Length: 150
Image (tube, rainbow, N blue to C red):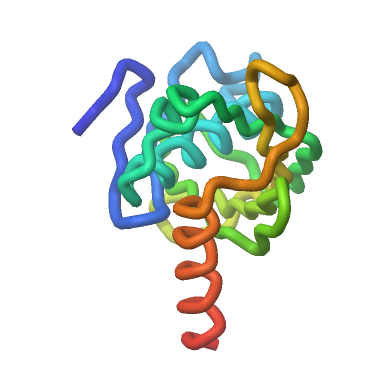
């Protein structure tokens, strides 16, 4: 399955994409700003793959707003590389969910890591609300399976 961004979901929690030419700088290296966009794409696909498309949350009047974002660049990514972006839930409680990301190339080299903290907000009241129970369940199932694998 492919969308207009040229991305495709792969195994659960992993998004595969090929950077487009316009995402590069003059040296053919992917511009640093694209990573945050890719994190958002990977995050929405992570939700969709687990049966909770972001659209459903919005229909319920809930928005997940980025309250923190960080990126660590380890190696460059280049135009037309096949990349994998893994989304990993770290914690979720109250109105916040913390996700981490790993960007790898087709050789498995780790190119970048990142993190976001999202706040669950009532769209009408514009106030924080508890994370939806099904989102908490999805995140905790992944967190628990990671702890079991360790």
